[in-house]
Length: 217
Ligand SMILES: [Fe+2]
Image (cartoon, rainbow, N blue to C red; front, side, top):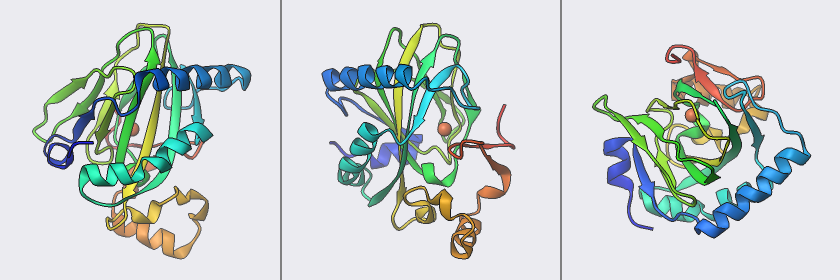
């Protein structure tokens, strides 16, 4: 993998072409779509028109296996927090938002779909970038810092997975392995306060996504 550090910090995102082999990406999409139908997965409060799953095992494999590579790409060690996958349906919208601390360094990986669908993100100079990914391509981005969204999907289905990390020496390291279950822990609460971003945020009922009350539009 080439070095993405400079671009990530100067643009809030960087595209990693061929993060997965396209054939492998489509195979994972097929597997997850079958799973989502069999398990009758529902959507979530952020994207009701989807079927979504937290930490699906095949995606956890990728999350953990690719950790050294992501560290090399950004020039800092990262630790995994969680993965989150969706099959988006027709008319799905991802509202403009920023993320909770566990998503400090994130990848959105496109697996397959029946249409292109731009991922939109705000750059540090206030511009809106629209990024189209092919199956297997990933975009690494700063989800806590940069607002991001998707406009209405015009196709019938689109399969995508988020891989979330924190920097092991960064302020969000307390969220390693997505320690929501430890949220009553005094040290965890103190670290979270020190990280300084939580006062404006709320946790979804499914405990995954924190959408900023201040910034949601
Ligand atoms: Fe997000």
